[in-house]
Image (cartoon, rainbow, N blue to C red):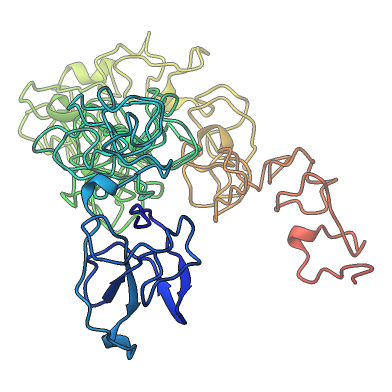
Length: 497
């Protein structure tokens, strides 16, 4: 009988009458093949197992075909035709039983009649897409129309029309990736599953980290439209129209002066004119002359007229009316500029208060103001604020105070808008009483280095810190020179090997 062989996935070589024969599945193309027969006829090889001596060799449809040479590789071409092993000889699982007789072709323990992958070992019988073809032999396991080799999620159905996304580029689509952004946090616990940022800083404290928060300052404006995305600016004020909102613009009025130095933060005034010296520029001061009357209510806008007196009732205050009593005589020539004669005799200061009760008989004081309550009206009181310092020597004549003047600018500390004279108004100065024009704040705690007891925030007081302005909590000093390593320009490493 002829020696039978099955189409296994391996190759073997056998000597036959001096020729080397290599087994390959028939029909691979380009090779010359010859029948391996048994018997004692010429060319018979008695060395094959199961050889049936005496039986003449002959070509049949059940014979094994082997490759004995490939002309394209320079091997001898014997000219024999290719004989294909018939299907009834195929033995997928190599158990010696042809598939046509084997009830379990792939030997996975599942009978062929019930096996959803008949020729592929698949004991689990998984069928993700329920198409009757097991995942082990299905080229599209999830049935989404994308072949497994091209599918970023071969076991997850991609909805029709969707574009598979792989945020972190790890070869796994987001649909089946437990950590879409590859930041080490599983999507189940990652507040921003598609934005890699393990620290998750949340500027506005709304529970949504910056990297996936579309409104980081929580002012109601999405960051892409917000003219101050990191500082709340709900009405989007932008005085100078430079697309940087006032809340984050260092120069709101674009007059070339930073807000911290500008006496009119939202009105351009490069000359910084301040008529009444109150720290508010004249162009934005509601009370330019500092008399307490503002805007249209002031009958003398640029002349101090504290009580808004208008002796002749013509709408122009006495402080700026050239003829205060409207008697036809200019005030400069009128003995009683605000009172028409003869009432002038009983009221020499023309404040409409009889001299007998006037707290300043010779000085106009119609409201009889007396700041310190000493019975002497303010216009004629040599110490208006009653601090026992005469007005001419008082650095704050209208504020009871001592003579302290930290910056020596002749404006007392109690009324000085810039105590330390470093150019920063007190409300902007991170050290209001310590001169620090650079406003350095090493640890970013809002307290300038010039007045912070621990400038670098390393919990070591400056006086004990070997690097007062460099974070060095362990006070490392490798060369023992008293200067800490972070601030030592040359660190000599001891015992360096």
